Length: 164
Image (cartoon, rainbow, N blue to C red; front, side, top):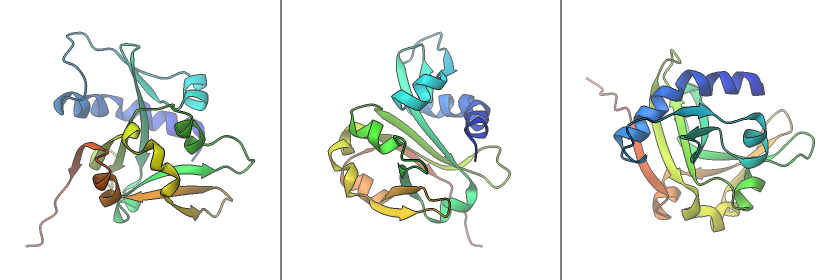
């Protein structure tokens, strides 16, 4: 997925993400909230994707529904060209709140999501298990239970499908 496609998804879902954060009391109840996508510099260099009232910075990862079967939190840790990755920025102290959501099959809403406190796991980020992608990139993954063990989940939602 290209950088432009990722930004389009962030734009498409920004109101839903804002609503989730507001309903779960993650954002203070200001009357006039302004939500905007971060600049290219803020996204690439400072590790956040959205800003609320220019103050609260939020990293965002939106996954396709097919990855919900893993239901783990992943952070890119190896780029194709050796450039700095998300893990490098987080290890330097950037990023504090991370919204991580899995879209429904129609890609119109979230079937599942978590909001992660990066400060709770920052010193343990290198404990994730490494996996390679076919495009010569890689990521560290962290099971949801690992995040719970480190008290890193601020809020979460999982759509329950009943077998009748």
